Length: 285
Image (cartoon, rainbow, N blue to C red; front, side, top):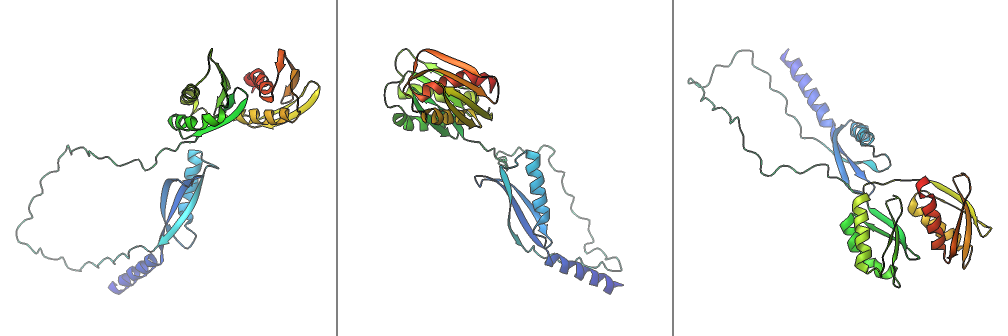
């Protein structure tokens, strides 16, 4: 009987040695680690770890933003076989009773160094698209503070002359217009961008738009999937018409009824035409 038990234990230990542990990591599109999933590899490509990782991606709604990557496999430390208990009870080795263990503290001290969060939050870039006078620009930053620092560096390239008109959208949110009675300095523009980013950086909205129309009876059309792309596509499309000035425009958004826009003066650049069009259609996006 003892020989059969010993053979079974040796067989189990052999199977355990044949197995390998493996690790699957969940990483985002920037190769940043989100979570780890240790598992046992039964020569199936760490199937258990991959399954748990994909289930976690679905639970967190990270489809298209994260992926599961198998890191590798290692052989675990072999587990020694459990000794067979003797058939006779072993007499106590000490004739005296064991020393009593004092009770544990019911109020253990609080750990002054709590463990770090194993799942640190991730942040998407803040994207600002807009016009400074007639100049199209785009700014990106990790957060509002990073956006402000980058703006101070890029604004001198964007602002080629005095400006008193700012038109921006943060992360696809509605465009906002800002004016001043004097002239904007570099710090003024970047402060407005930073304030709007703090209000709207977590409100990412995506839209789809198909615009057809005519400017002074010359047809145009363009498509976009967010407000920033709408402004860029509009300026490219209107700029290809090569009109120095205009005051009459008609357009249709996503097949809706045509809207007519006019101005008492002149639109003298594609940026002015597109700004007037987007201000009119923005509430319907």
